[in-house]
Image 1 (cartoon, chains in turn yellow, brown):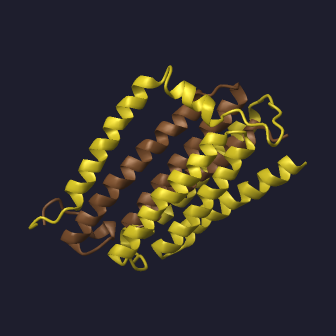
Image 2 (cartoon, each protein chain N blue to C red):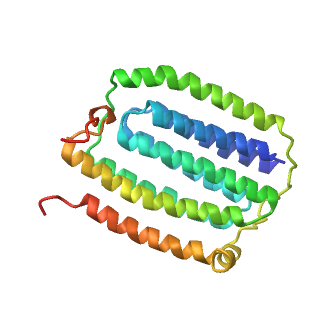
Image 3 (cartoon, helix red, strand yellow):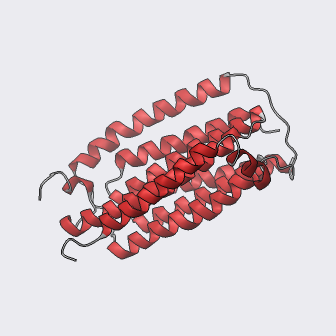
Length: 166
Length: 100
């Protein structure tokens, strides 16, 4: 019973945050509602027993990435978005299209029979030790390639954000 | 018990919200946040299936998605700062020419 209550609590947080992200006009409000979505998703990950993923969801996504977003919004002094002719067409065509796709996916997913794996609260299967053994065992090569990717991303960010005349 | 399909429906809803934000938003930073929302929705699907199939590979994939998202946001925000310096605007409708 507690499991259901927690699921619907965090799911409502996700849905409310995602809708608020679309409804808000100012980017800082959208960023804060995205933090709500990410924190609720961390709760859902922990509910499924994914301890490590829930932790890095809070640390990397809700922490590092969103701080970067809020920092850039403040740095560029981003104001309320202005609506042009193109955005009205996008709303007229986009909203019904997205509604149709959402209804279709929901219908298909709810029709498909899925077995329920019972997980009790507090039963964690994706602990840091398990993930570490996989990461430095079968997934060692992708892990090392990722470090090259991060290095290139750091250099790219430095080059892109540098002033031309400096 | 919560069936797997509930998690998948929630994930699909978040993904659709991300697509919708990508389409209807005109601020380049909000568009970028919609992309992050879509990545998060996919992560939820990965973890839900990892739980269903009792396999930890899904968690590893979520880890890699997060690393790529972090790298992408660092580079993307660098591009946004560069665009803002040359155009003085964040509206994507006003950034419609390749040359200045």
